Length: 230
Image (cartoon, rainbow, N blue to C red; front, side):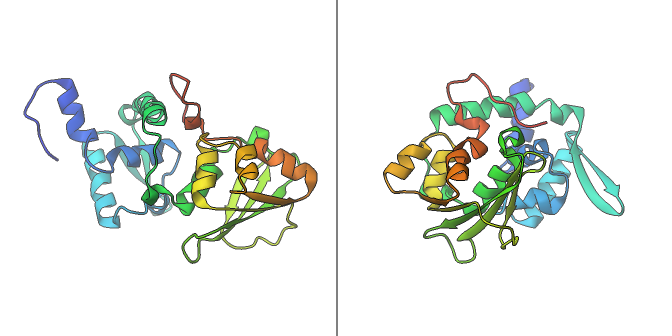
């Protein structure tokens, strides 16, 4: 950990929080991920060894606690770590407002589907489960096809193999288009009009899908803050 050699609380906090990947690890813990592999799934570009090192640093700093549950390590935020929630919410709102131009290497189908699965609002879902088959044009091999099982009781369950349920909606698009829709930068109607997205299947389900998925909480860039799920 790099030291600034200043007593200033901002400098001392930055010594812990400004390390690469640290805030994103805290983001995953705030999302409720507590297993090493689950945290790593949300940060696929960090090596396992670096992730382990960052978690140890956060433990030493008193932000993360490591426990064994049935012999398996579990990680959770301490009260000091949990107090970072409003900071990350404000950072997310600021980033959504001012950092809107996404770079080509930031479009990732795996992370997009992960975000949709854990941040879709189950209250918007259909009472009876509906399955959406999604095809990403131009996605890397093995990441082109996904299935979303949407229900009010379970939220959005994302599968990368066919779950075998009847399909209500077939959705064809590319990763940038659905990412922009999810982030509130493009409407479903505009994507359909521009033929960047094609949707077929049950008419009622097709009409309801935009409301079922809605948008990321970070999409509301006009708000002063957003709320990460608790």
